[in-house]
Image (cartoon, rainbow, N blue to C red; front, side):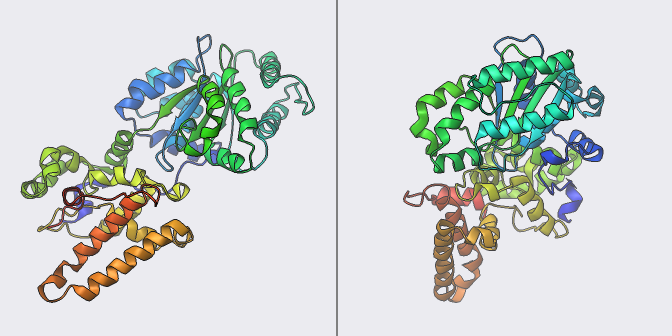
Length: 423
């Protein structure tokens, strides 16, 4: 039996792009293909609505946290599409989500953009808001020489907006903030940007202004920003932090990328059952292995821990590509046939942009050296163990790049046995 015969493969070929969310076909695709983990329905979406609904109390800006490629742009885009067009509510494929977002449906006008400039945040934000205001004939001009506080100017802007659109709110959405802040920190300008973030978050309280942005990790805990810890605490007070968890990514993999019927799950369960005698983790978590098959559950956890080149990593796209390579293959009878995280190291070593990273190249060169030693020293009956030995080396390579290279990061034999499921 082939892999493709025991699941419904729906590849994820690209991340949501903010600059295409005005295209109707693109909108419908984003609305129809969204997957709703329980945590999104119980916590994430209600928190969005709580901080957006007119007349709410203690409302704050919204910071969405998730590793690159985990769906934070899709999540923010979904909320924006419903908020700006009530007709989009009917396009959601989840009844509970429709009920949750009913109070904000069609209530807002939206301006979304991606930060691609190494200019001051206030200058970029006011330029983008001004572009929106001008396109809608709203009578307000930001004065770059004004001595008024950021908060005063935002309040005046919203007053002008509400004069023109009294029944609407205004959403300002930025796709990815973290890399911009890192660049500003490197140039010594971070401390001048944090008061802008504070003001934007504060402007959301008891108004019809909503500010949301995405980051790959919490800006308050980012190691390179800790010199500004006092100001970061003030920023933190002005935002709701909504995190896309590892469990949520696993759910998307199960329900969208690798969906299965109960009958197909039964086939997979029977296939894996003989191997539970050898692998303790599989024995104790068989349903997790069935739901994610053929992706090993530890793949997602180890993938997200990688510290190098975060902007290059897109887990859903990566898994789509890896499954696409094996989808027409027969499921092996003498081994579990899982996609494990050591395979990702091979993919990274073939990526020219990754090899340009000096830290990764150092680890890659070391792993290549280990591969050579394996080839030269595994003789006689041991030669059949060469593929497994190389897999172990690759897995250790992944473990090393999950921390700073001066740290002693590795894996135990027991962990590698459960993670690689060698037979």
